Length: 43
Image 1 (cartoon, one colour):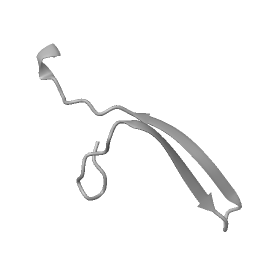
Image 2 (image 1 turned 45 degrees about the vertical axis):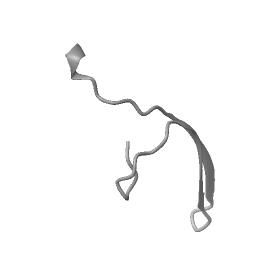
Image 3 (image 1 turned 60 degrees about the horizontal axis):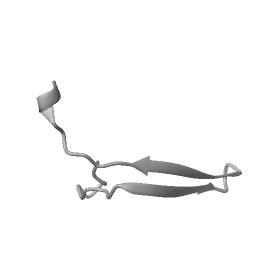
């Protein structure tokens, strides 16, 4: 996975805080990402 500047994102646990006061919403999302290279040998 890469970010918007095409830089690979590190594997790990991410806490994403989203605040939308105009909607009266505030949330924290927990996301676990693992970066693996594609291995076509198993296809």
